Length: 437
Image (cartoon, rainbow, N blue to C red; front, top):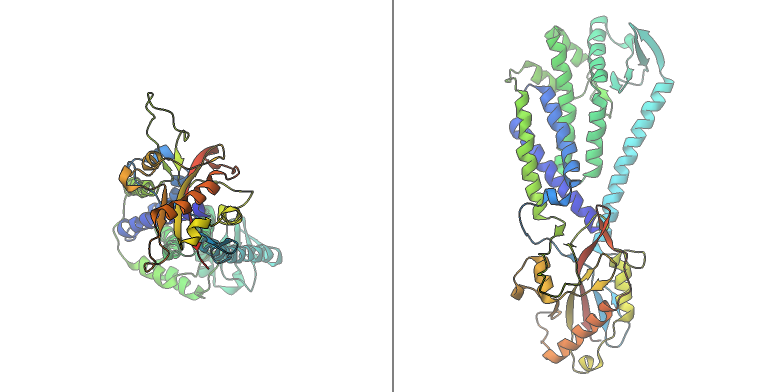
């Protein structure tokens, strides 16, 4: 789950940066084709960037990423160990919330597509000058890919010509594809206000582009505006509706913004570079320095990752549940530590290797993995549960640490994580709570 949220974070980061570029450089530009291309790039480029090889995305050096923390297990001296709260982890609840809302959004879009398909079957087909129209009293003038929904009986001849030309331009320009992409952006990034603003910009710009083309071909501006007003109904769907955003469209038709140039699309490159910089700050892989030939080779060969496309699994399930269950069943409160009132929380760093083995790294290895100084890292750390708790003697703390090390180091093999289809090393941090009843 953690890697999904990381990818969503990266996608949204890229989308925000690119959309900010649109607001700064393109929103007052009357070259609506350039605006359309840039908005499409704002949707597509973030997806392409996260699919780039890691070596192409990492150029900022060794920056420390966020370590994956598994939910703690609590061990009592006179009872069975149990997971934190015995319920789903916060990541699991976030995943349920995210997928629930995204599913609702996808369901809504599928319902709209089914309605369009039903409208095609139920509408009367008319042939006018080689163009097929679908006349349906329940539909407003709109288009969806090759389908044009329009009833000539509902409009005057002059308005009919304007509307038909408008919808034909939508059809020839494949504007419905832009609409589908914009809807998918909102479904995936429903929690990000920028996604909704991006969708609105895509919809508005398609209408501006079409209106501009109508005026450029010699359509009378005054009559065209009247046609817009006559058709205004205020509804919205994923079809290209002639009557959407009427107020803004009329304003745009009467404004004299400066015509931009296609060279402005070059802004994509510095903005994409900026996005890649932010990606590298939370990059998934951290390279280990080469091992000196005169030194003993480390058991951890190759790169050590923090988050990968396919995270490791334990006993066929998520580590947040299955590994916690394993720890809860095998950790025993050291008798001497319990007799002397030693409590606290032990944090252990361990690596699931590309062979699926569990390895607890040496302090020097952990320093290399994290990119920190040797005196800044601790392989197995201890902390009191509460600030008011007294710190037990060091020998009892060592007993708690040794028990955690014993159980983690004897863990059964995992299914290794994978990055770009290759098995890789993945590091975790795991807390174990020792509590006296």
